[in-house]
Length: 127
Image (cartoon, rainbow, N blue to C red; front, side, top):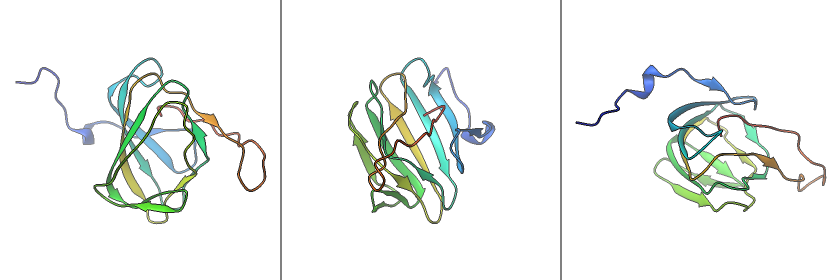
């Protein structure tokens, strides 16, 4: 029997610091080490283009439609970004739930907005 077991519904959603984006930590601690984090993106939420300096990121869409740089990823889609590679912006029109697997502590470095060239001042906790 697995020594650690629980149901994800038992965990409370936490605020990520980005409007409409909440998370649950399933394993690890994204502030300190590798982790598995479940994210819920509410309809209309947007995450600015960004990168993670030390963490490789693998994502698996559980439900809904996750849109990354205008490419739509539906349920079952898997995509990844090696540490240091820019990705995003992310958005969803209908809402979605995505599981992220992070190889190391997570940081969120906003990249200049492609349309304005200005830095986006978004920060995200938990992922």
